[in-house]
Length: 231
Image (tube, rainbow, N blue to C red; front, side, top):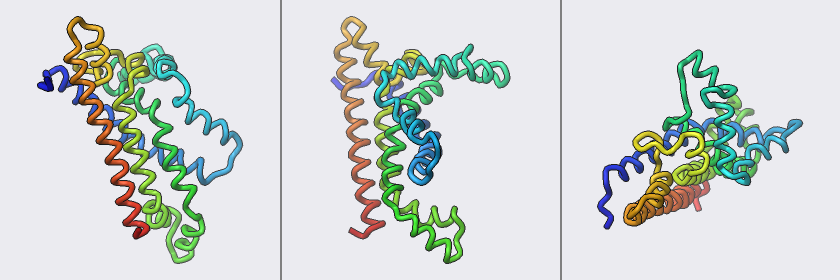
């Protein structure tokens, strides 16, 4: 029953590629936004926080449509990228990665922000008085303490991007071999006559990957917490 076809394995490969690239490219931005929200006071902070968390409460199709307006070939930014750099993101796996990243971004930022808010800023100040600059103090003192939050956010983000459907199909379409991730392949299987066995195998793959990511998140968080706090 679980003898996977080449099309199903291709969907798995695309899903993993999209999710791993999403994590790699989004990590610096998530760290920066989380630090800004946790450490800085500025006008419009509440609005920025609301915008960051907006993907959690709006339909993913809305995100996909907004990406089409912004990054489509005739979009506000997409036309510039296409005309000047010959870069097209719509209907590509890179576009699928962008769509998944936007939808899952709040899940990356929130654990990091909460971890940063739990660190006493005086620890960094103490490191600075001992000769470290602010970058060194952050890397040597704060980063190890917040690492459980970073790992938790990264794996939650990874699991969410694996399951992204609405924004991806709207912005990147459902193209086998190019943008067809596991959720999109599952959708196609449910629409095809006699596709129940294919759908079941894809459900199995999706559940295994999602459960693996969540268990890894818990394990890494506990392990990192033990290394930092010793208990």
